Image (cartoon, rainbow, N blue to C red; front, side, top):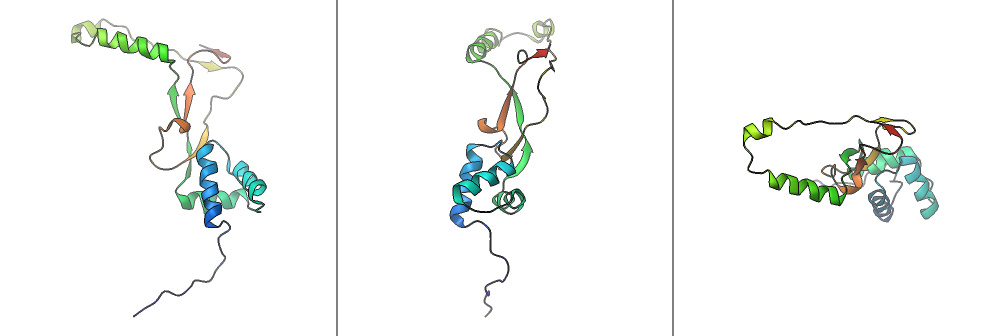
Length: 145
């Protein structure tokens, strides 16, 4: 009969309680950087932990990975209702009627801020969780469209 002996090596930086706290911090703010998470843990737990340790040992060990946030067009509720009514009114249209519709889209150029990627921490399967989505606007916010 074989038995597993206690393994030697460096103990983990965070206890089980610390890992639970880390999970809560990340789930409250998916867009926090590893640096700000490490700072938060240092102030709340009094624990000296680097952003590298937070990222590599703890977050990745829990299944969290840094991913680019999904973008979803921001549609106010009143516009969503209008769109639904429009679709319901045309649900029985023929293919020929749909071919007469001209579909268009707009392009937006940002003036003041970067429209680049927003990085978040998320678990697999959380891509479209509301906290993991960045709403995008067609107009407004200092852009040319």
